[in-house]
Length: 68
Image (cartoon, rainbow, N blue to C red; front, side):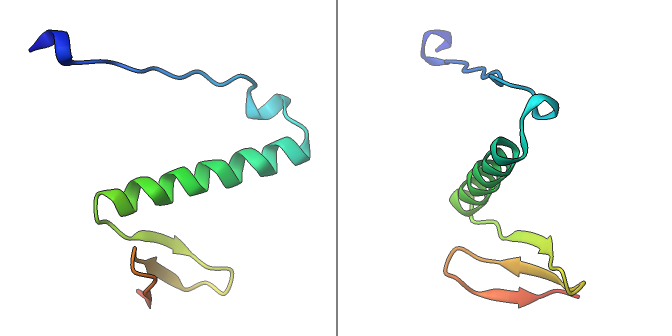
């Protein structure tokens, strides 16, 4: 069984502190999309706080519920 287990370790090419503002914005967007994709793949909502202060839960089917 151990022969079938594979580990994949990634390393960042450039640390966020060393990125310019355009690279950092692109990195944040990619990170957000990957997080959303992962949560939806395990049937969990993406929960975040909007700029207006409301906590919302966004689901895979597109439903957005205000939690607080």
